[in-house]
Length: 145
Image (cartoon, rainbow, N blue to C red; front, top):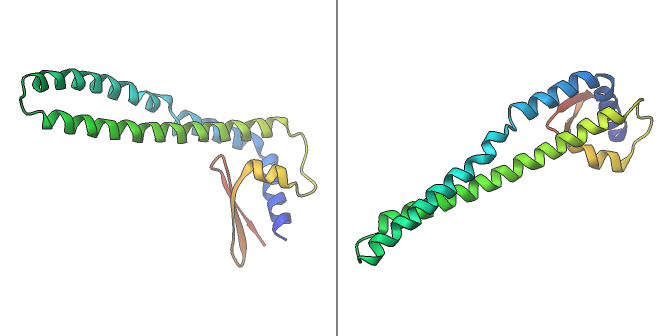
């Protein structure tokens, strides 16, 4: 029964592939905007500046705690930005895979295909009266059971 529901949802996506393709493209254009990926460049520049600044007080044996704290803070920000960039890149890849699948598929799916499901679907949540299928691209669909 679960397999039938999953096949039904995949076929719903295929039946309205133009709508889903435009949704996927909108996701790429907004949520996954590449300008967010450039944040590490700014952090790297500031880190270089602070490391040079750190040499001056260290050479004169002055207090440099503020500079070192700022360096640690920026390193943490950079690490967080790198993780977010990687997550966005993964999402871009999943959306590209979903787009390629929709463009390649010419007809409905007639039977459950485990490999296809693993490639397209992130998770399936089963309720008493419905199943929610979440695609790796972020698209979510409900199907009544």
